[in-house]
Image (cartoon, rainbow, N blue to C red; front, side, top):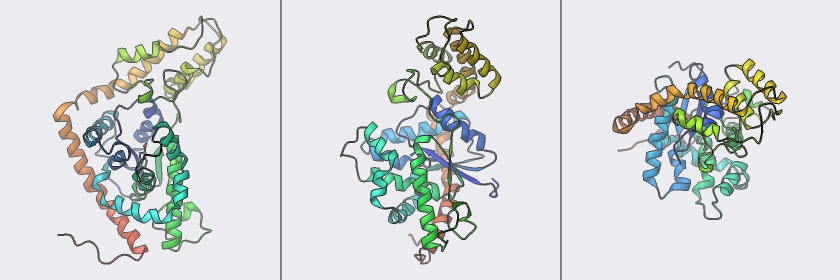
Length: 357
Ligand code: TRP
């Protein structure tokens, strides 16, 4: 738990559970790889879940526990990293209000990630005030932990951009950092916040098994991390490419070849290149062969996760999760309170701290 390591913060919103391969190559893989070199904070954005599920608190609670189980099964490690439950970190809510003064309202409403969400979730004109507010809240989620890096999927880039804008503005307005100071130099020039950078996953957009849309639970085109081996192979076998025979030259960018890149290319780039060359040339390689090889590689990746997930089922698993949450909240509040105190001091609203009770 060395504090000298640079920090990372990222998170998920518990609007559903059920991580799939798209989550893995887009973000989870990055988190796993960064756990040793960085001081990692993984946030469960359970307050944000209320932006669309305000009337379903039981679902949000179940999803919150489910997400922590998913993370543990994937290999995120609460002994090395800190799991942060958003609703138990009051500094995040306070920073949200303070940051909201530094972002023009119209800029929030033009945020492309929010606009896309309003469309794809069919929110129309009926979404609550808190829905666009969550974009400001996300700035607070991040900045409360003063991280250098924020590993996210491509769809979150607009939020990270907004977060950078807020941090720059805060440092300039309240911490005397000059307008010409480069983002990377803000912290050492006296800024309260380092200006965080997004880190996008290796595969920014994994296509679903339908071959057209992004892999997503709601589109029914996902291979889940906890599908059993047979289900994984069955889903792969159902993929259609329109190719007729093993000697027909195949499209080296089609869905199967994208999966070859994503899952075989990671560990064995030479084999991926060979498969793609043969496929493109129609060198006696059937779609069925590719699917079988993909199935083997993907199942080898998922097997240890499925085994860990199985051990977390039921109430015993819930108890483990609650303990992980309690430990994480304790550690997270130390850092977040420190940030809040520094921010309030810079804003000249430090009047001797809290007196509660
Ligand atoms: N909005 C993110 C998502 O839906 C989740 C999230 C909340 C997050 N707060 C964050 C991600 C802070 C990165 C950093 O995926």
